[in-house]
Picture 1 (tube, one colour):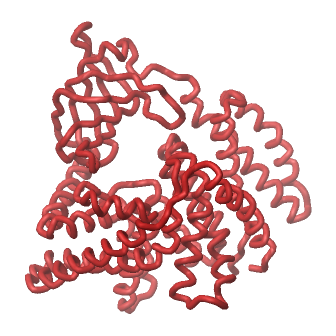
Picture 2: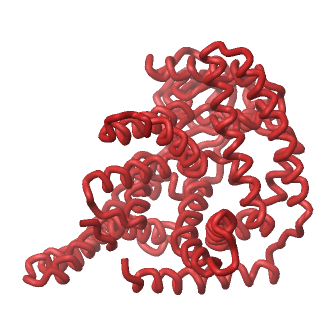
Picture 3: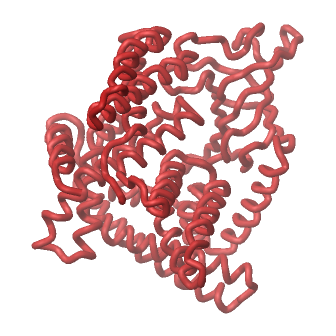
Length: 483
C-alpha cells in the first residue's frame, strides 16, 4: 500500500538545512553543532521506546533532524577553519599550478571560456619549490580551448586570492599566460570526452543558430547560441529552459518510455530507462538541477515498483542529501537554490493553482500555466535579490516555449539517430525542420521579450509578500487534504 507522509529523509534534510542557515548567519560555531544535537537526539531515542506508533514516528523524525544537524556541523566544519589551500607557499608567490577539470569547460557569449579545476600542485618560481595543494580554482581565458571533465591541466600564471564567501571557490584565477592539457585522470573520462567530441562534430554539421541551440538543449553547451537568441531567452523570462533540468530529462524520459513500451517484458522497462538516464547524466555532466531530476526519477520509479512511499517531498529531500554528500558547498550555489525552490513552488503552488484553473482553462493550457506560475512565485524573491529584476512574461511564455523546445529536442534526437544510421535523407529532413522550428521559437522569444519587467523595490515587494504568505498556506492545505 502506497503511503504519503513526511519521512526520515525529509527531517534529515531539514536538520542539514538548519545547520547551513546557522553557518550563513554565523550564529553558532559548527564545531558545537555535533555536541548540541546530542541532547535532543537522546530524547528522540527515548521516544522511540514508546508504545504508541505516533510517538515512535515522532522519535524517528526528531532523530533524523538531529542527525542532519550533526552531519551539517561535521560536513561544513572545514569551511569554518579556513585552512590555506597551498600549504608552505603563499598564494601570491605561485607562478604555475596544475590540477584536473571538475567539469567541462563552458563558453560565454562574451568570448570568455570558463574552467573549474580541482587543484593538485602549485609551483613557485621565486621560491623554487613545488608543493601539493587542494581547493578549487576558477579560470577564465579569452577564446580558450574546449576541454572536458577529468582532463589534466597545467597553467602558467598567477593565482589571485578571492574574497571568500559561502560556497565560493577557495581561490580564484583572473587570467593565464599559457594553458596546457595533459591527458585524463581515468580511461573512462577519456572515453566520455571522445563521445562528446563526436557529438559536437555531428551538431556542427547543422547551421550555426539551429545547431548551437540544439547543443545547449541536449548537452548544456551554450557557446553556439547567438547573442540575439540569448537576449530573447533572458528578456522573455525563459532562460531557465537552457539549463539542463527536469524539463529536459522529462522529455527524454517520455521518449524512451514510449519506445521501450514496445518491449514484451514490462519488468525490463524501468531498468533500461534508468540505465539510459544515468548514461545521459554521465555524458553531459552532473549539474545540480539535472542530478536532482535523475535522482528523483529513479527514486520515484523504484518506490513505485516496490509499492513504497512516493511522497514528493521525501524524494526531493533524498536528492538534496545525495547532492550535498557529493559536494557540500553546492548548497550555496544559486543554481542549486533556484532548482529546489522552483520544484517546491511546482509542488505546493502549481498543483492548487491547476485545480483552481480547471473551470476556466483547457488541460493543455492549465497545467503549464499553473506549474510555471508556481515556480515563478517560489523563485521570485531569490531572483530579485540576486539579479535585481524579474521577468513576469515567463509565466505566459512557458506554454509555447516549452512546447517548441520539446519538439526541438525530439527532432534533434531524430537528426542524431539518422546520422548514426547514415540516413542522409533523414538528416536533411530533420535539419530542415530544426531550422524552421528555430525561426518560430525565435519569433516567440522576441514577442515575449517586449513585455515589461519588474525592478527591485516597491514593484518586487508584492511578489515577495505573495511567495512568503501563499506558499506556507498552500503547504498546510496540501498536508490536510486526503491522500
